[in-house]
Amino acid sequence: MKIAVTGGSGFVGRHLVQRLLKDNHEISILSRHKPKEDCNNSKVRQLFGSVNEITELVPAIQDCEVVFHLVGIIAETRKNTFEKTVAEGTKNVVEACRLAHVKRIIYLSALGTSEKAETAYHRTKYKAEETIKNSGIDWVIFRSSIIYGKDDGFLTLMTKIIKMLPIVPIFGDGKYKMQPIFINDLTQAMAQAAQNQRASKKIIDAGGPEELEYVSVMDHIKRALGKKRLNFHIPFAVIRPVAALMETLLKPAPLTKDQLTMLKMGSVGDISLMKSLFEIEPIKFEDGLIKIFGEK
Image 1 (cartoon, one colour):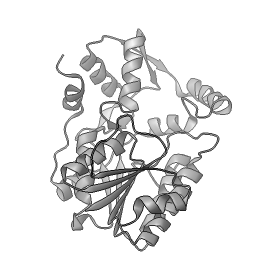
Image 2 (cartoon, rainbow, N blue to C red; image 1 turned 30 degrees about the horizontal axis):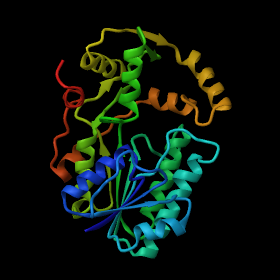
Image 3 (cartoon, rainbow, N blue to C red; image 1 turned 90 degrees about the horizontal axis):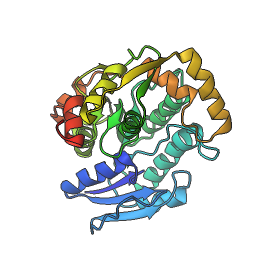
Image 4 (cartoon, one colour; image 1 turned 180 degrees about the vertical axis):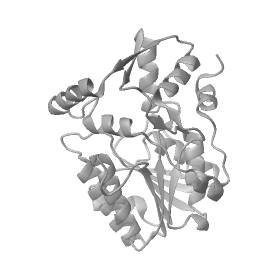
């Protein structure tokens, strides 16, 4: 099968492409950046372009039956806002899919997405979902919790903090919950969604088997690294003005008010549909860390 992946050079995209290759698919990758490692595979075609340009999207999608749409941002830059990149970018992807007669769009969204969500991140994800659902093209939507794996954004940052600092900053009480999903489990489900007819027009919560408090997540990482560190709790009332100042001075900001809101609201869902559709058993966070760091 011929498949296109937008955002194919990103963390999820790179792992998904490797998973799709195992199933012998032909892959077209659209990305704004050169991948960290060249993929010397005759079944992979790399194109550079943006979801903001239809003329760059159509060549990447042409002749493909399925499109995985993975492009997203977690913080706005001066050029790339949530509205432009997520909402408008998805409209462009859908239009390109129509022109190319694509049969199915598979979109990576996020748990917490809703029309009246507290954050711009989740509200624009909702707009993107609605565009896809109303496209007239078959679709599958994955709403994911935190995704972790080697060279990801979340675990890599937490590892640096734990290794560098004698204490670990925790915002608020740290009791907000998340459901970390190992990258291999997510890409296995997504790859199966390309041809699984039972997944048609389904919104699927994607997460690991455990609902873990943030402090527990950090404790797991500390143990995996063999590091003993005390937690230092910073009230949200203290850190929020700092994040607001960062947003004013820096684009993208290393910490935003939206990110604090998302952290506090947590990220958990019901993964029973994912497990029944794709017959996978996602691994525990502790076991995923062992795969990444090895036994301690």
